Length: 110
Image: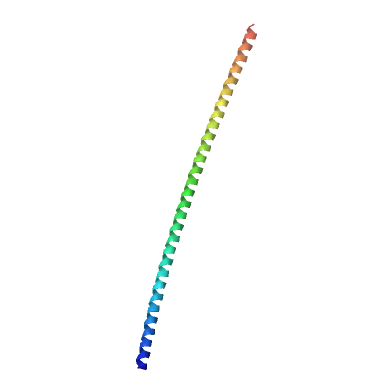
């Protein structure tokens, strides 16, 4: 009887140990799955951040290009205005010279 009881106890212990090992294996698997999920989420977040950074950089570049274009246009306009002013001044000088010449001719005739 005692032997049967001891064997029964041994079997119970073995079953308990087996159950515990199965349970701990399941827990390990669950933990691994959770870790994998967390890693995937982190990777996705990193990718999103990188995309946002890239978009931000592209926007900055576009803005800089637009600013440069505007500056170039302004410079061109200023140059054109300066040229026009110079032309006007030259024309005025020529007119003044012509008037002076006419006055001199009139004085000589008189």
